[in-house]
Image (tube, rainbow, N blue to C red; front, side, top):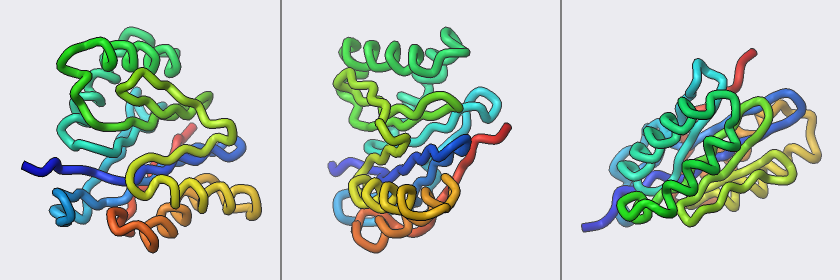
Length: 179
């Protein structure tokens, strides 16, 4: 049976602004099974943004695991991410999960992978999923050469990715960190 996959997430940090955008497409093989899915959520009373790409059930399991790490390390996003990555890599069941997570708070934006990686981008922009490379390139260009806000860069970067990647659509969800 083919896996159900969710694609493209883009996280943009620009100045004091942090925004995360996700497309709405969920596929099974080469078939779109849902066009308006939400792959983003807020955590810790809106202080953390989180999104996923990859296997849907796998990602939802990882969201739960990440939230439990946030309970243990409520003021330290990076520590919670590292602890999740360690658990994900070492646990026999979790090791089989196929998804990537993007998480962000006021201090850090992180990509978390099941092979133990926790990566913070140099420029505050990270993308994952099928259209991630396109969204990343567009967001970097927009961020460097325009005065757009983080939310505008995230929206437009994902819209550009949707024009290029067949696994990314333009049914976007956008979340921002609020004060």
